[in-house]
Length: 393
Image 1 (tube, rainbow, N blue to C red):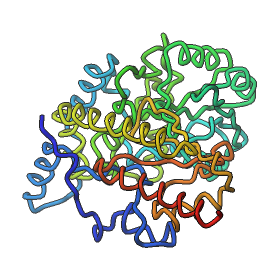
Image 2: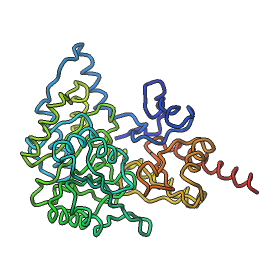
Image 3: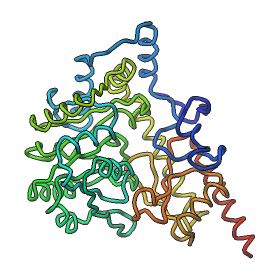
Image 4: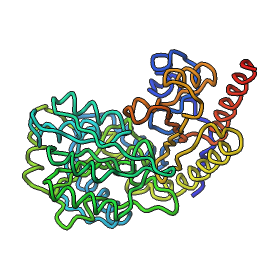
């Protein structure tokens, strides 16, 4: 499939958080936005065609989930990941973050604790705090340029915890966890009767040489694992807000459904339904082309930093279109780093500190954009650093 990922698409004026939210987020309306996790690429043609066809019908009423939607998801998980999912396990939800809150409310009490592994996707912190649960942290360890789980600490935290919010592949550090790591995690969960909520929405965005293992597929008895999946990151349709929880345990599933019903939350939007199905049915070739393009962009960033910006070290991602940049050699505080990138380099990225104190000195870069724009961003950073050096000398 020939897809033009170099094509520039003007997203300003579309109520885009990434573009039209720049002034509110960065205090500057013209920074190059390489932050929030959506891509600047057109979604697969099959998705657009399905949306256009549905829009042509002039009634946009209450909508059911068709059998074909469930079939599309089940087939995708089986063919892409070798995971056989039963239809009754699937609970459709209005987005992954709301589903995490729902699971916490449904399966834990206010006096119980939930573990996260920072630096980690910042809504993990808020869904725990805002549901009134106790936050426990088991920080990842950066060893020789790669992040690892601290299993000894995690096991200790699990003694007093009800649940773990697990990110796989990991956002923001880009780790694709190995099978031995996941099996060790499962051993800890079994030992301490820990529920694992595994956020795997980046599972399809894996670079060559790495393999994603769905955690529940490795468990002999997957009842204590709840898996969040969605086409949102894979096919660049996060604004359509439809995701799925895979919940093998019938009691857990009933509790989650009860919580959704209590809030009168419906995930059935006529446009999200058709896009969800079209993406999983016909998006495979587009995804292959995307990952080839992203791999080349990631390599370009790696080479550019090594040659021209050695002060910034790349933690080489194994998955996702998010890069984790170690900026500690710049010898700046987190506030200074943020100011430098926004007001001197003109680049809007996510400060590492927003992913927990373990992210201090880092920045998260979204490379889901035309490659020439990513190179332009790198050149802007290089020029800004040179101006700094010249002003000091």
